[in-house]
Length: 112
Length: 173
Image (cartoon, rainbow over all chains, first blue to last red; front, side, top):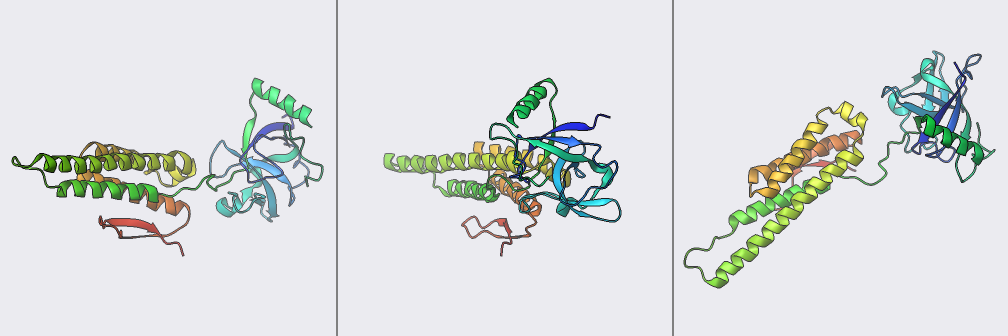
């Protein structure tokens, strides 16, 4: 399996780090040797809708292989608060790079 | 790097990237089923007013006939308009507000919207109190689901208009 996967971002729960139209390159091997950590941006399968992927930030690591995810804009985000924790197996990988169009790349101050 | 973005965009044309939703649940506009409920009330009221209109008898004067036709025309025009507003508002809720998750949760939603639109057409075409009441009934059912998706409890109460029919209101403190 090739480690990198491309995704295109839609909707605004991760704004301003990720805006609609941004591309994210996900490292599917990121969690081969370690567990996802709090604060990391991940792409995972939507527990409420098959075939759909979501991009959120890890907010909490639970002992049982479950992860709480949150959108950066909590007021408008649908995340673990509505669908509960996400199992490790649903996580596709860690966002390695985010690429924005004309307005320039996502700044170096981005925490991922 | 904008260059890499352009490259990815180019690659997208060959094979589109999967979408990862930074999903938000807030409607991008402002929605409220009250418009549809209100429009249904107006249609009911217009049917009532048309029913109360005294029809000019064989001995009515020209002026009396003219007055009757004028009133009837105004009631019918208002009924047409508001039945159309009703249909438009129901379509907006259906197409713009409700999401696939809502339909999973309330599988009757598509059928309900379809029935609401049919009753709206009938209420518009005919002078038909049953059809107008059906419009309100469906609007109330849609309102109940709408407020449930927002976690807002509802209650039914008699509307404070001359139509006085039971209407679903959100319990907003």
